[in-house]
Length: 231
Length: 229
Image (cartoon, rainbow over all chains, first blue to last red):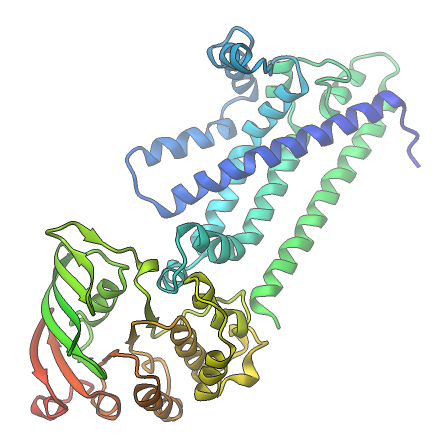
């Protein structure tokens, strides 16, 4: 078995927490945006689509820097959050979760949107004629039918969050125990003499986590698929 | 007595529907060729399409009135719909499909009524299956049951047999006749097959190219060419 040092465990636990929080926080907004893009026509739709996809195509450092100047303590949003709620993103693990959530968001929205588009609007119409309001239609028809895609999106977002490096390190730096994620720890170990063994162990952990996420998502998606088409 | 009063104008691309009619109790057939606007009328009554202008009233309730800006959303109309393609929810069992409208319409559980509908349509042995495992005829019977169990004020049947072969049609037609005579729900039956209409309808509305061209009894079916040919 891998013999991980306490510091390495801290980085792993922190990474998992950041990735989970980022995915969970991105999900409601991701569902809403994906639904808007899949089902509604409105002014500025192309713009919204573009903004959502921006973190996918921008250099991560740029995304991190944009987060820093807007959500940092002196940035307009960051200053507001600190003054009103006493909430701080910069140089905290919450900031890392924000950066990871933003980076994973396009992947989440894409997967959910694609699966929402496969749901036949005629089924939603049928549900409406049976007395279901929009929220019920979404909860009982649209969402369950799109579930495999929603799960796939969450796994992609989680994996992206787990591996995120550029935006995180730019926004919240690389502080052990606070913002030093798995990726940042590997990067750090490869830069210090004699850090190869530690880096190697964490690389194995990263591979195991990524594979595990894939297996879990595959299992969920297959189960969800069976429910519609099987017995 | 008039159950449904419909007077609506709606443009959809190149097609313009400008139709006015009144339907009484019993089964009214909306009979005409494909593309005449039959399904558009169904969607307008169900509230799935919004008219450009006009008004739609069911019994004494105004469902839509462009002058007074009334537009009841589909989920509050209590109008049961049976579509050509069934539209059963694939992820729910037949039992849950059947119960969906009752639950969503906020009606109390009524096992006796549910039992009657299940017996009427002969679908008791299908309750634990999912729609993917039903035959075409079974699927349409469940769809009819699902619409009935929300206790609709009006039942819209939009070509409910069109996707079925002749044998399946013969299988379902008697259920529809029973429905008309026993359940006493007013029905608007859309079809372009004269045979079907003859079996079920008590009144006939002829529709051609977005206009109601004749209204009367079953004799209207013989008046023109059989549109199914």
